[in-house]
Image (cartoon, rainbow, N blue to C red; front, side):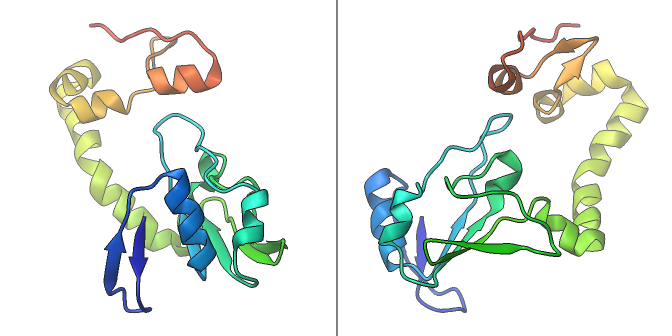
Length: 165
């Protein structure tokens, strides 16, 4: 967790993200942004419905983790045409696929990051590209009809089979 003292982002303090510190932070915050990612898994719930009672009236929760199930108990996916709702006097913004609001920019950012992987696959073939790049290999979910990503397998309750060439 990081505290900022103004809208210009002057950093004041960084704290460990544990239950006690989260509860302290949400009592003081006007805006809480939940951005938890556990690759292949559902996001953990960090703020319960009961915890909302500790928050200031008209404070805001933004759940960036909504595409992985959300990290606030009261999160439910919304859309750009009706992006907000209120629970216990706390405004929620839980738009699924937030990058879709800036589709050109997000597409350019994604392709700038992933193009090299596509080129490596095209130039080397899939198996060689995977063997040469641990990051590409870690992003593989299925291969030859088998689920090869352990976190995805665990979250879905499907057998995991490590990839071998």
